[in-house]
Amino acid sequence: MITIRRLFTFLFIILFIFSCKKSPTGSDPVAVIFSDANFETLIRETLSKPTGDIFDTDLIKITEIIGNNREINNISGIEYCTNLDKLELNENNIDNIEKLSSLTEINYLILSSNNISEISSLSGLTKLVELYLNGNNISDISSLSGLTNLIKLYLHYNQITNIIPLVNNTGIGNGDFIELEHNPLSDISINTYIPQLEARGVTVYYDEPATVVTFPDTNFEAVIRETLNMITGDITDADLATITSLRGRTKDINDISGIEYCINMTFLDVYNNHISDISKLSNLNNLIDLYLGRNITDISPLTNITNLETLVINNNNISDISFISGFQNLTHLAISDNPLTDLSVVANLTNLENISILSLQLLNLNIISNLTNLTMVDASYNQINDISALSNLTILEYLNLSANPTITDYSPIAGLTNITTLSLDNNHITDISFISNLTNIEFLNIFYNDIPDISAVSNLTKLERLYSGHNQISDISALSNLTELEYLDFSANSAVSDISALAGLVNLEIIYMHYDDVVDISPLLNLVNLSKLMAHDNDIVDIETLVNNAGIGNGDEIWLENNPLSDTSKNTYIPQLEARGVTVHQ
Image (cartoon, rainbow, N blue to C red; front, side, top):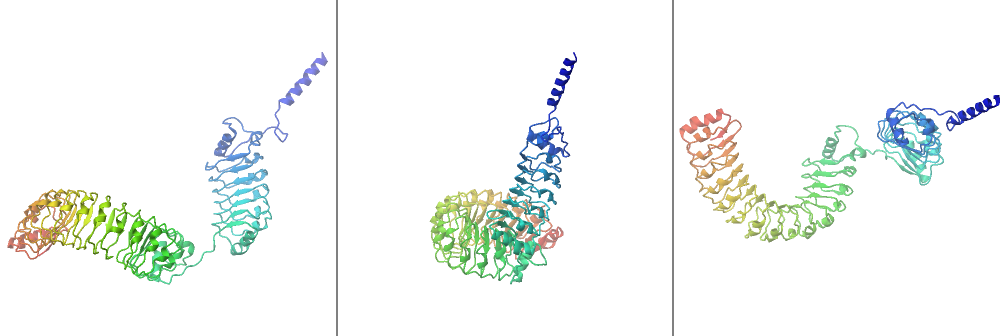
């Protein structure tokens, strides 16, 4: 009986011993408590263990943890993950990494963009191959001197001044990589230690010492300072590298020396200055929009700036633009008023949408006949006699052919039904029937021609601005349908006497009708949006209509000189208008 009892006792003891699960260290399993709920959540996800205690025996099995941007503040508990090969906790709020000291098997440690300042706990992690500590607040890196297996080290955006620990790390050598940009490195680090590392075959990225830039031209310096918002103090190359847009139009600039450091600039406008030398622009390869004028002869320094989309070089002394053949990104080209003789290079710029070629003594528009992406053409002030090339430009919206009196055939314009802006002033035109179907026109300038009949405009119901002064017009009844008109000029058409067509044009704000033959202005009664009326040199006697127009008031302006105004108009109506704040010229 005693023997059986002893046997059972012995078996119970054996079973109890084997039922007790041991930790890897031989001690009892330890339930790990995490101070940070977000870190605990990450660990549970890694273990696929959403509930229940987490033991040290669980954590020792983990070889990789990745938890970027998880709002983790505290990594207590990580010390049990002693078999970790990789830990990645970028963009958290970690400021204490003491618990990492036990992770002696780790090869990859990635802790970018945290709040770490103290890294002495890393000194024993000698198996580290890649270490990312960029974007922290680290100043002392002495603990890295013994990490001889490092091949990639990221320390940019910290507060490091002295990098002698990296020189003393005998394992860092040929083919290894160190990132040190955006640290306040000491002169000895830059001038001595980095060259020593580079001599060992290490690739080191760091910020070159800032160079103070001087500007020979004080007006240009003023533009730079305004752009940087730096009233005083040295301007460095690093400062200039931050400029992406520079506006210095009409600033009396002679010399743009210093601009060569604006290496990230995409927009530059120094138009209408006295600049003759643009060699400093030659390496600004990020430029996209460039405005230059008026004193430039040699434009060849721009040859390699092939990303340009806008190039405005009007009003210079440029005779050769052959270099722009490589500018296939150009959408906007303005080369007006230059002594150019060969424009053939323009024909190949098939992405052009906008071109200004005025004052170039052109005889025709053949150079643009195949540029079917053009929406805007300004070819005014030339000697053009043939515009047949326009018939291909079917998406054209803006066309200016003013001051080309040698044009005789305007029929190619008739098919350009997308035109919204058309300028044809000073051309000796007698017939405008070719515009009758251009129903998208909003702006029409036919000033200073020999036009007797404007009936062709009657269908242009989208017109907002019409310049038809200085012609031979006698009848403006065609205007009665143009209810969108805001600006109307039919001045110096001495045969115009009847303006009844204006009665329903209630959107009119500005009317120029001087030097006509108008007597009756009663059609203006309901034009309550009128702010400017130029009606001098007519035959107007009675202006009661203007008094009765309730919209005419403070700030508006009326010209009535050289009209046979009645005494009532002079002595009663004009004072009434002036009392309402209207300026009346008489």
